[in-house]
Image 1 (cartoon, rainbow, N blue to C red):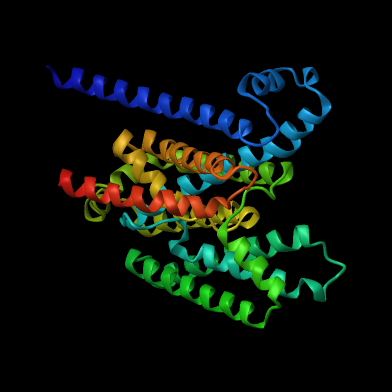
Image 2: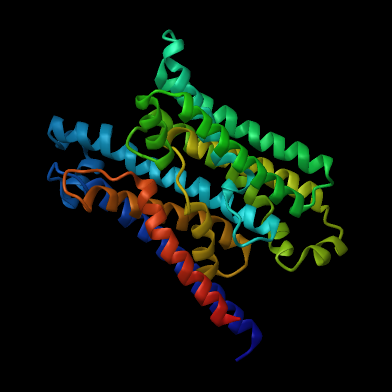
Length: 344
């Protein structure tokens, strides 16, 4: 078998797997729309999506005002975290890196905690906008601080990781301080927000997160060859004239924006941005032309399936999706580690 034929077969196999991921995502979306106590089966949902006027008004409200925004925000948040995850792992050359390595999640939680604790002091401000705005502002601020520190210290990946971890623990400590001074009701709200929940998102939130992802994606795809080159090692990439500090700067900026917008509306959802890229890498290899969009697809699929489980495991109860992503992510991550050890 010639090398060219082997390459064509490899490309065909990975293309088929990529198409299978897209199909699985569509199926998961439909299952998510069908999950719930309203007795809407798949046939009814598909017909309603195709011809909304054919549905009864109550079912139309349930589908388009309740279930569809929840299902779509799972895809948007998952895709944003997956895209941020693959770029973080590649540019930091760290398989344990995730969008939250830079401290974005802990500072988003800090911003949300401040909004929850001090919201009663500002009765003229609407809590619906105050909480996500504070979470977004603090998350973006942490990303900017990491960027500034990275530039000041020469862009070393070790320094970026260490400073991100320091910011993570700082955010956790300050969030704990907010819980200490807050009321019992505020503490409960902070804990619930930190768990991660998709049910409070509506169409505006879906539009904002989706727009953020679609704006950032072309910039990530533009640098797929650079990211693939980085997988061969920084020394090799540097010998070919690649400006590593500049690459790391733009990746950290993109990751900070993606992670900040992903968590500000739904809370902290762990493991999705960590596991999604690893699953995509096992299926699609190291070619970032497929791996970058594939990571977004895998993370979106994982979060969508978690959303389905959150509505079906306990009848009549919606489990916060952040709990399920951790329960699914930990054993899956262990299996990935075992599989990596076997392949090496």
